[in-house]
Image 1: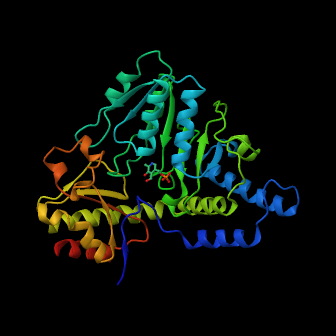
Image 2: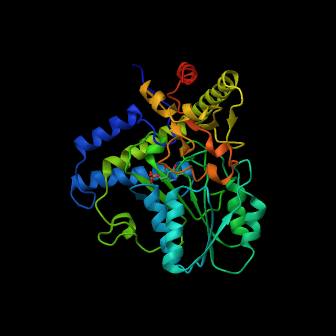
Image 3: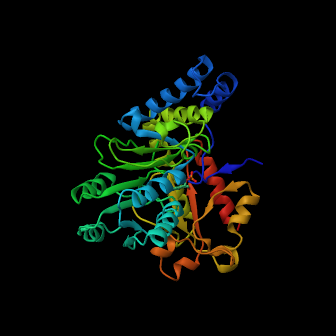
Length: 373
Ligand code: PLP
């Protein structure tokens, strides 16, 4: 059975070049990067070259890139340190953020008593930027944390505008770019954000490695204490092969960006057309969404609802639940719950997310399988 992977917002398959890069490092460069002999120096050089590669594509300085195990770690560290050590008293965010942000913020509110404000979500799944600006107009030391691209529905913020607004009101801006980095160009000389976080496995790199961008001269205390790794900010022997794999994946993603963006954009349009042609009353959740994420509400009856993901899985097709209402034991999606009507939230939604490895034939097979449910 041919398996079809259409869940690229959850994670992505590794590129062959990334695997080869990692294998070569595992075989040849096992030295501890902190050792001063040639084995150590060679490993250290891989890390620093990787850092430079990332910085080159983001147009920032290599010193501003700190390797972490993933974006969740980066977000936890940055938000916590800004509140604990940098005097932040208020966080502005939205209820459609990833739980890595939402739960971190809730815990900081509980632990430090900070004020938290949530930007309104419009009926089309986008954030209300007027409401955002209204919430900024006070003198409390504030941090804004927003995701660039929403992982469930693909709505996005205008990074330039949001960063400019934050700069205008002199507040810190942390951006979760997990779904967008490596899929769009981000120029950190032009966009005045203070922090961003990323995970390699979303752009065809390995799991368990990511990075944080920390704008130069932004004071931040270490996440982990110990050795001098990562400028003393994150102590512990570095995962050299993971870092090399991350950098390789990031390099290829950026080099292929235009071609792959065009290809995936067309694939998504094709999928929407086919869905609309075959299922009367299908609705796309969210407006102006990112080119690799499609979240659709299916006009299926209650009995069929529970069977969709199971049936697709039996046919070897992987997509994701858009709303978790298919099973009584799971809660509805916190993202869809923010903007869908109470009637629509009960219906099944699917998240289909694409990569350059997908084909139109795979979309056809998805449609055929949905028709048999
Ligand atoms: N933020 C967004 C938007 C995501 O989609 C994810 C993962 O799905 C994360 C954060 C967390 O990423 P990780 O689990 O790699 O830390």
